[in-house]
Length: 105
Image 1 (spheres, rainbow, N blue to C red):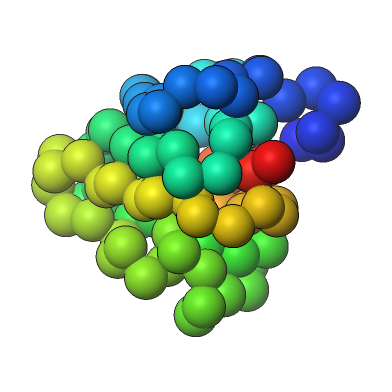
Image 2 (image 1 turned 90 degrees about the vertical axis):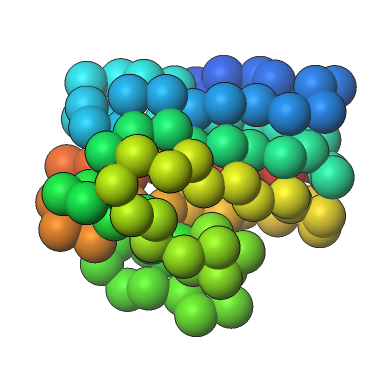
């Protein structure tokens, strides 16, 4: 249900933090709009909820989210989005219930 029309607009911020990734299916602003060159940081429990870039459940090896790695433990994952586009992501374990999109303008 994530579209650019219902995404949280966070354009103009140099950095954005997405928290509580252990509850992606409970609406934690999983869909956001940011400006190019924004740093997006995911914070959460990445052991049971590894982060993957791509459309559920197909990982995109070239996604800046995938290139940042799945994370481990509670170490935050930082991604700088330098190019405009749509960057979907999902939990590699809970693929259909934990997902979102970063829209970059």
